[in-house]
Image (cartoon, rainbow, N blue to C red; front, side):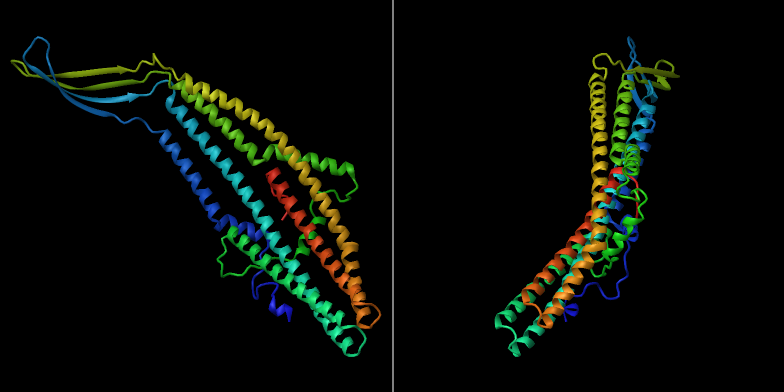
Amino acid sequence: MLAAQFPLAPAGAQVLSLEEALTLTLERSPRAIALRRRLVVSEAGVLTAGAVPNPSLTVGDADLVGREAKATFLFFEQPFELGGKRDARLTLADAGVALARAEIAESLWQLRSEVRKAHTELSVARADLGALTEVAASGERLVQVAEQRLRLGDIPELDLIRARQELAALRNEVRAGRARVVVAEVALGGLIARPPEEPIEVPPASQFALKVQTDSFLPPDPNDAAVRSDRLRRLIDQALARRPQLRVLDAQLGVASAEKRLAEAERAPDLTLGLGPRFEREEADRLGVAARVALTLPLWYRQEGQIARAEAQGGQLAAERDALARQVIAEVQSSYARILAAREQIDAFEETLLPGAREVEQISRLAYERGKSDLTVSINAQTAGILTRQRYHRAVLDYQVALADLERAVGAPLTI
């Protein structure tokens, strides 16, 4: 009855693995699409930076000094940038593209982390709902047994009232669990750009737990301190080499260096050459050639402000990178410790706590049905069973969240 009232998964929905969810996110997520378009914008800046100044055409009349006749001239003028300005602009534009790529990579890793957490959250929410529905079904049987025993005069009416109250509380928990599933579906659907009318089904939470035993970056033996230390050191080295945020700071340092180089290049004067025909009106018209040379003189301002700003920004970014490198090490260590702790919890739940809780539930229910125990024992066993399964699911979620944090810290996929 409860299973029909509160379905655990969409009927006919295709199971969406984590790998498929990540692929869909990169293909269809509006955030991922916007990030890719941002790169196109940055690459267009390279074309602008490499542009050559356009020539100009000047036509004018001039009085000839000491004469009544006039001269008409036509100048074709071409500016020439000196001091490597164009190369410096191209270097700055290329540095901007590198920065955009690094920032996009960082954003995509953040998006990947969110998808992993949302995917696991939905799986855990469904698992919680399944556990609550199963216990609520047991609560229905408990009420039926209480009604039967009351008719036989075997129990007081208070027991039946308590059994019905417990069932009502369980049904309320099932409703809350269903609401959590809906929220988790909406969150994951938004990340993968799944239309609201399309159902989402994910693998059960237990399949996530099985991955704990196959993750190569974990020591096979949780108590092997030497192997654990060696693999943690490798993860830290990988994080320092690949962490997207560190790459962003490296790219920002490249931009600051390119900005300084451009400011230094701007100190050089620019040359403008003009050449064209000159027509003089005298007693006899004469046609000649006119030339013009212009040179900018950077006397009063020599880009001191831009150079000082670029140098100061470079020093600031270098300090930020050093601080971030220390933070990365701490994040890797913290995430790794959380993963190991969650794995130990999952192992304990799967090996002893879950089977023990189920056995206690079954024994206490059968004992009550046979009149060998009171209702309190059975209700307490049900409550303990629910808490045990929910804590197990929390441990699975903790493992996946810690894994997502570790992947983001390292900047590389560790496992699917």
